[in-house]
Length: 241
Image 1 (cartoon, rainbow, N blue to C red):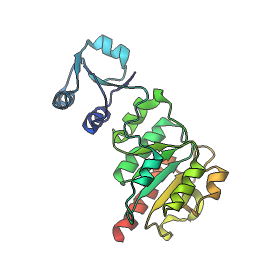
Image 2: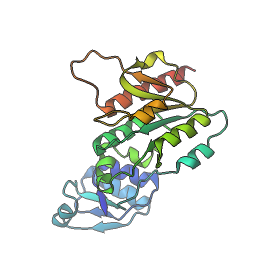
Image 3: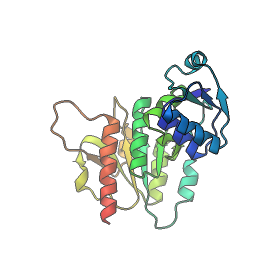
Image 4: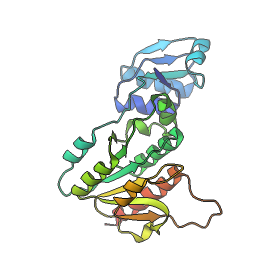
């Protein structure tokens, strides 16, 4: 089992309606009491426990902890159903993550996706379930709301997106300044891994590469920061159309 301990992560998981519980309660301050009330209203089972026992189960708790299934990715959907359910002529934004292995980065990216209304996050490999709590806490609960799909073949997924009318751009340091690129219409962005960037095969299937102009002295931005900047520009352009 996995236990969520961050207040935002617990609150958003309960609000999402996805399976969870019980909510373990040792001692509840004002913020924790609000979440207990929410859990009661949502008919989430409560279990009173001692502080010592809760510390043994979830050491970083703040008086409460929410139990979730190890493999429960709360907003998971199938990639195929996402494409099938796209309405004709509707806009959409997809973020493709190529081997993002750091759960803190993944969670931060999901938080950006929630803020900038990304319709789907696509990954290749199933995230390691033991990091579910880290992802939920880092995303401030966004993992419960952002649609995520896994596929065994990202190249094939990119080809299917193109057939559905998506333009696909990869992110790299030396890419064309993102603000110069037309990002209207159906759009997919590819973010590469923390170490090696976008793989060769995925790069070859991109319609172009976009970058973030900078004047810093270090090599590059953290991938979650870069994702946030790029998604902001996507949303900025779409609001103008």
